[in-house]
Amino acid sequence: MPEARVTLGILPDCVWDFPCARDEPCVPGARCYQHGVDSFRCECEQPLCVKPDYVAGYKIFTKSSLPVDLEIVALNTLSVSEGGNALLTPHNMDMVLDYRKFGVRDSGVIFRLVTPPKYGRVQVEQAWQRSGAGEVVFTLLDMGKDKVRFVHDGSENHLDSMELDLELNPGTGFTLPGYLQGRHRFVLPINITAVNDPPELIIPAGKVLRLAQVR
Image 1 (cartoon, rainbow, N blue to C red):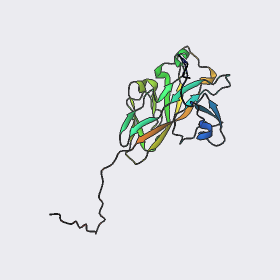
Image 2: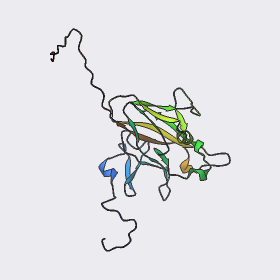
Image 3: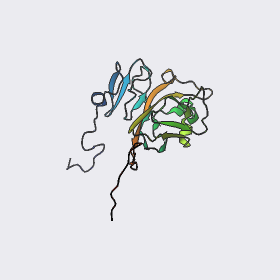
Image 4: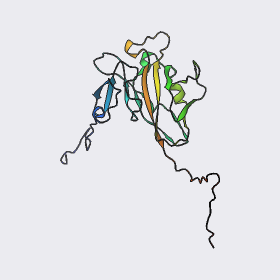
């Protein structure tokens, strides 16, 4: 629009994306709905409706019959170097919902690790609660204080993920509406940046390596 002096909300190229048609992000039997210009929503009768191996970020919605889909959290891929570690921050699990108006503090936004990553571990410094053998539980407050970290095991893999449950625990005198109660399950994708390993020479037992002498 070369003759326009002022433009607002106009972007070049096409901003639309159709993940339902392009990526098929939902588990078999689930229905995929377009949400907005570039997002999607999966509906099914299972706790997890998005494929566990789906590696792109996405949004979690309330489970209800509300006229408008209510977003709870937006997921952003966690990036880590091969053999390194990275903090899990509120940016990776960005709370879109205004949870404070329901009487929920940062310490009441609770995450439970359901399925750990395959190529590393989640390390929590002074986790406020560990119920059951090996269960990892942390809060939004823990992430805000840099207490949650993913440690990669150094294996040669570029993608990983972890499955988590999100639960809101309101303070005294507050009651959550039905569409926010219970646990909301999702998968956080992990992107692993490869690092060039130094070459390693392996000589089988009983073999002799002969080198030419250079003068």
